[in-house]
Image (cartoon, rainbow over all chains, first blue to last red; front, side, top):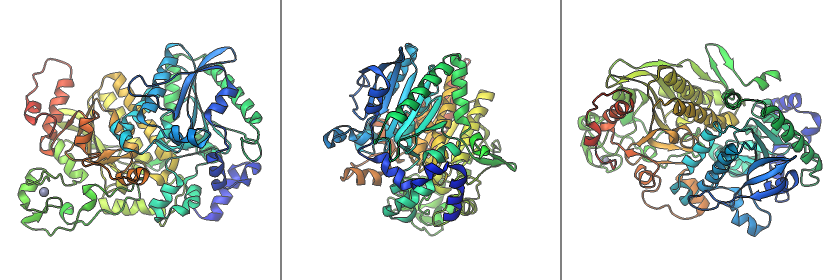
Length: 297
Length: 307
Ligand SMILES: [Zn+2]
């Protein structure tokens, strides 16, 4: 797509106010150290948060937070990537890049939530699953694959918020849900723009260009039929003022729990399955299949 | 005779890992003739002998890359493979351009491989037992998974469910097809969800990993088989070796991410040589099928899982 065509398209599909930031500027906001982490959201959205630790198999992975809490008088389960705040904390939490045991901890909490009929709220914020020797030894691929598959069998409502970076399989490992929302300046992509630029042009400094092509912003993903909505942020980013964002998130959680709790487990799982089965674009016998949301634009 | 003469496969614009580190990537041009030089052990071997073994080096057991056609021929009974979903074609949802337009990349991959996409799927018989068989082509944009690959895997699952016959998928893939962006990622969700339905219905799914299988394909349906088999020394993993080396800034241990490494760490059921693959599949399919059939002892002969 040419530069001008891209601009024209985004003008048509994105409200004017959101057009102020370039994709790269959004990405920098999504990665900013000032940006609230999952824990910041958890503390402000819920009360009585009790953190639960460990995958009951190998160790506790600090890059994933999990636990149970209270939301408007109801118990909910919570999972999320945690990038950390101070440099030391960020190192401990491996900058939000999980090992297999992190995903297995998240799965353990999802199954726990199911047993006790608690809706699950998930916070996605990761550069991706960690690429390391031990991660491979302990089955990074198996852990990610299993989480994704099992998420389609968890018989309680799942609400996902991509709050910062939605980095590929590591994001999807806790990113399957009945409703998926993105914060206005969050990004969600199959590959980091740096890695993409390296592969395409052998030059990671062309990442801003790759970021444009990958269509990784919230408005892009809404238009492509991948997410259910965009949670607005304050001017300059959610770190400037969380209030507007928090009140929208509260309303969405409340609304979603309300509307999904009326469904039978079978309805819930079937709808979740169908929702994701729609995320595909191909042509067959002169007919083009595209997600419904993109047909509307 | 493509496999002996073709030069190094083109860099994989398809796979995020851009993997050419596998043995498949180190292929060099070999002259055709009665004798050929193995690309791994460099020994001169009798070509007919290599072919008789299903394109395996008799000296070092190196499994040469084979085409989708050859794989189908090796695994299914003659003339029984009937492709379905063969008309599904990729579109360009992001209007993706790098040095080439994505549709042009697809066209050149189609021309190069004679395939419409990176996977073919069909009904077939494996030693007289009905199955759904899907085979990946690494030569088609690195075997990368975009919407079409995802859709074909899902159709394969649906077909296996409908017919209640085992699903066999033979993968080789660099991972996600980044030209399809988020749609590529969502195929991990679609295929994994579909496999979950197979599990629920108790229809067997045997995943066969060949060199190389990485990224979004491994981190979804490929690792979810009831039984997971790999060909000897296949490279299998999440992140490509170069990505890991760059991240941790140290050399990777010998044998890292090889099939045998995964077997030792508990992520594969067995490593099976190509010459024994069909009989192994047939035996497993027999053992998984209801009824009181007596299954032959092919697997015990096939060995201990160590290949
Ligand atoms: Zn050899």
